[in-house]
Every structure is written in C-alpha cells, then in structure tokens.
Length: 111
Image (cartoon, rainbow, N blue to C red; front, side, top):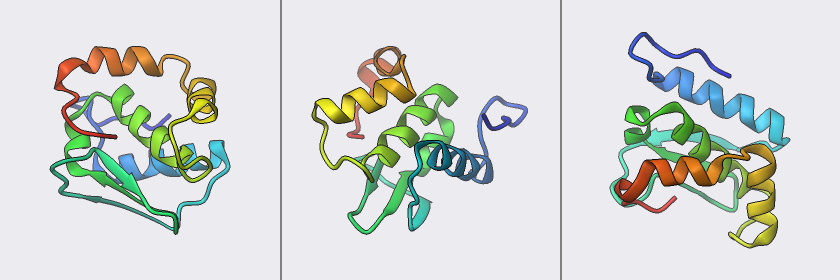
C-alpha cells in the first residue's frame, strides 16, 4: 500500500498514511491516531475511536505493521477477539496467522 523508506521501514508519516488507507478500506473512522512510546502493548484503541500505536512498530517488518493496523482498526467495529473479529481479520489479511507466527516468540507484547 504505502511506499517504504530506503531501509525498508516506514516513517511516522508513512505509517499514519497506511492507517488512513486501511481505515478507508475497512470503512472505519478513527477519531485520532497517535504513535507513542508503549512498553507493554503494540497498540490500543478506545471506545471513542482513539488508536495509539507503539513507536517500536516502526522498527518491525511491514507485514507485522499491517497486522497491527488492521487489528486495531477492526476493534472499532468489533470490540473483542471472537469469531467475528477473526473472520474479519482473515478477510482483510488472509495470512495474518502466518505473520504472527513469523514474528514468533518475540511477540512479547499484547496487540
């Protein structure tokens, strides 16, 4: 979707643009998107539509970034991780389980 910088990683602006593109595709409208230092989670969202992503995501591979973005945006439609959530996640990112598996045991944070 979004172009990457020379080192293959996204800048803050590129990351936010990816969020905007995915939000349009999923048909959700977050009220605010922020990147900040987070030590225990990769991302979080509020019932009022605020989504906060960890700055550390910028050092992750683009496919994992996409997973984190789609995961949080889907929470604007479905608040839990039940069957509907996983079904929607699979519809938008059919390979989401492989992405998480490739990320491996280093997936020390909640998403």
